[in-house]
Length: 563
Ligand code: NAP
Image (cartoon, rainbow, N blue to C red; front, top):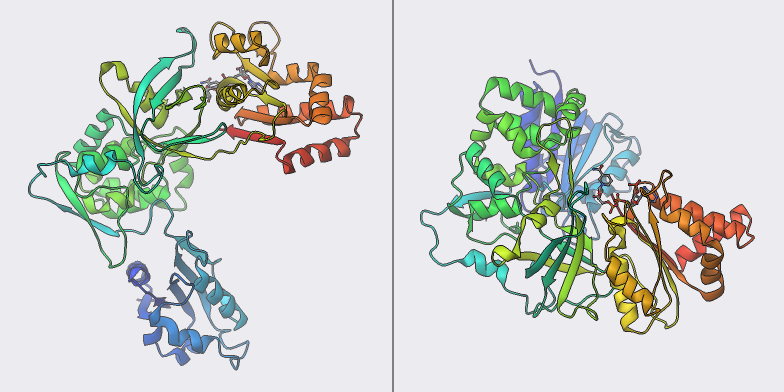
């Protein structure tokens, strides 16, 4: 017998809040709760004082106004005459459906939550603010309508290949840059594969300065795409169009229409990502197989989180591998749910490693190919770096979708300001761009601290630095960590040159830059700087910290670090 009474009230403009409310209603009834679901304005609002348990599901319109079907309720609930005990019998939860790209994100839900508290209601949960920008989006917003015939011309290709006449390439319209070269720059016996990759950006409208980033949209490997289609029973050659379930919902603009299944899987669905709890929840709902469903439910439940972590998160198991472990479920996933189940592949950012002044119409990056072992037999591979490393322009034309974004690092515009750059490992990439750019402008006050394991294994651009040193354009300080018993790192070199560093910073107004692995290096370098300020500058501990903070505030100390 139903044991409690739940009311779900929604304010919906486009139907999403209604859809979510109806799903809540179904879920509640499945759990033996008696539940009514109504639009806020259809509900006789004076009865609210008798309701013990209410979930409010509210959208917010673009201007921050309530949806049309809750406007009367809105006027009523904000009446000044309502006593502060009016809703003291009520337990409630507010679920807001919004889009964080709007300034008035979930304004209605937030305001309603506050008002219900003012009227004596007890919040069962903190406010839940749904975000349309979330990578999973709202469930089942689209259906895939399969086409009987394969389109004869190639509308897909056209869609992505052109450059945007309206402006520079962007996420919505990347430039398909020809890859010119892809060269391993670490020694053949070195554990880490690092690539120097060059793209031709002629005619793209792309321009950049030192410190800017390039965003690259990677693809899944062909074998993963094939495996995914096989386990889900999809025909990669079939074409579909995407139909929104509700009016007013825009399709993901990046997706061409019509689109082939192969393209959807290889370029859009992040099947190599490590899935989250919601993936298992949804799979459990879709599973026709009792044993699999039970296990998936467990992984999707609050109690199953430790086990899920052990199965999936810790060993970095991918969505594709999970689907292969649950073959009956995978084979039953309706294509309409693909965009709910899997996040879209996100672009990856790389520091640009070249300057247009030194390499006109070219863009270079330095990429460490991410590969590591967990307890799973198959090594884990970084999607973007492995994909880039696999492309070989010597075997035929290769094009990579990319666009440029202003970076975290900006270099001094005023002439004659020296710069100190600390970039161990691949952290040196943005400094190569900066040095090339500055040297081309006649700026010779460039001090670079570079660290790597061994001179003959991972010393990037050694010959180029030597030439610049010989021309008097660069002071290079190296730290080879593994050429002797004791580790020698960039910060050790920095400390040894403390007097020079202090003179450049304090006497000559130098800018200081730090880039590379985010793990320990940035904190270690900052500690070293503080010790230089104390010992060479004669500052007290607090004054040294204040000095560093001041450098940061005035953008004379900048960092770009990555995990
Ligand atoms: P990196 O090759 O990891 O490091 C460059 C230099 O920085 C090395 O000489 C390193 O020395 C040194 N270093 C280590 N800890 C430091 C610290 N606290 N302060 C200053 N210097 C420090 O260069 P990366 O470009 O950052 O890494 C390239 C790629 O390799 C990344 O994707 C990273 O995740 C990967 N990686 C993998 C492994 C692995 O075992 N699979 C290990 C390291 C990096 P030592 O290495 O001699 O300590």
